[in-house]
Image 1 (cartoon, helix red, strand yellow):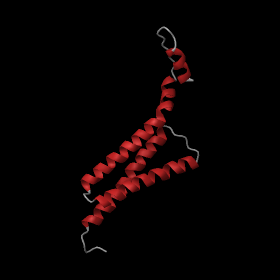
Image 2 (cartoon, one colour):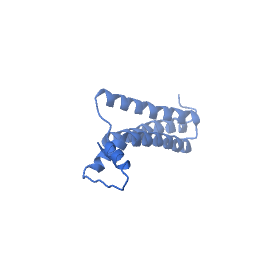
Image 3 (cartoon, one colour):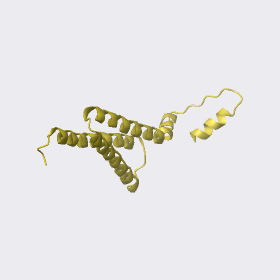
Image 4 (cartoon, one colour):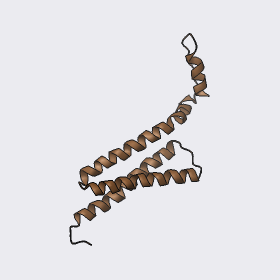
Length: 120
């Protein structure tokens, strides 16, 4: 509806402004997919770089990054299985899933590396 109105307005030979109180919500629903993908990719890359700074072992960073992507694929898969639509709340859930997966796997990797050689 909103994109159709905008196409009509753009083809007008004069300047037209339209307003409705719900257009902000409609714009939010239009942009949520692209914004979600951008945020998830940016968070995954940022967490990988930060993990590399704090855990200087590249193998552990690869496993932490794999854990992040694995958790994201699982959450997105279960969202589609349960017919949960992509909205702002589910976008926040995806980003929080990144935080939880980094927290758990980074702590395990750090303590494994700081344990020394005497650990099995």
